[in-house]
Image 1 (cartoon, rainbow, N blue to C red):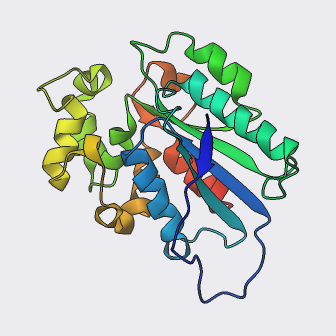
Image 2 (image 1 turned 180 degrees about the vertical axis):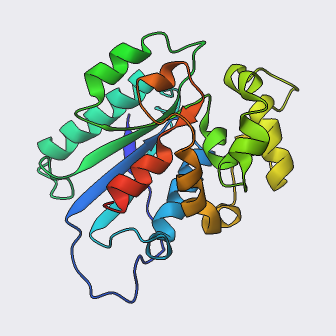
Amino acid sequence: MGLRIKKSLYKRHPDDISREPNKKIFVVCEGESTEIKYFEGIRDYSKELGISNLIELIIMKKDSKSKGFSNPNGLICLANDKINEFKRDNDKIYDTERDKFLIVFDRDKRDFKDYVDFIDKHKDNFLLGVTNPCFELWLLLHSENSVEKIIKPNYNDILDNGKVSNNHTFISSIVSNLYHMNPKRGIKFSKFASHVLYAIEQEKNLEQDLYKLEDTVGSNIGEVIEKVMMNK
């Protein structure tokens, strides 16, 4: 039971001289569809986005027995189990000194009561990618001027993010109408690829601090992409 590496048929940076990356980032996502599809897109478009060819993004997928491990503490357990497996098997794919696991999760105020303690405990050993209220907020930031036009005018409703139908919460409904797809069922990264850098800049107009994201609308996904993957 645990994580496995999700293989890709996409060859990253095909025009570059072949060289080993000097850092790997293993991505573990709370969601089984949307978040994974998004980070697969980041990996596959890494050259176009300016991500260093010395950084390799490795998407991790839960096996059939681990799909229920969706809360942040469960994700950490899966990541630690995989790290211990790498060490036990002396697997050279993972270097304890340079490589990192990125844990991507929502700030769920209804179910995630120990948020600050969690950040305190894990921020030094893992990369933490957080969105409040949910990953759809990060997707919304790819839309032009969405902070001023959508997020600020609807701030309280977005923070609460209650159900508005059988299929949608408040923010997933907005994203669905903007991009003509249900983000709960997966996404086409091509709809977002050309606006990733724009989303990174828009995110800076919202809260990015891990601790303040406890009760404030915001995200640090763009910050992670920019600082860690682009070495900025």
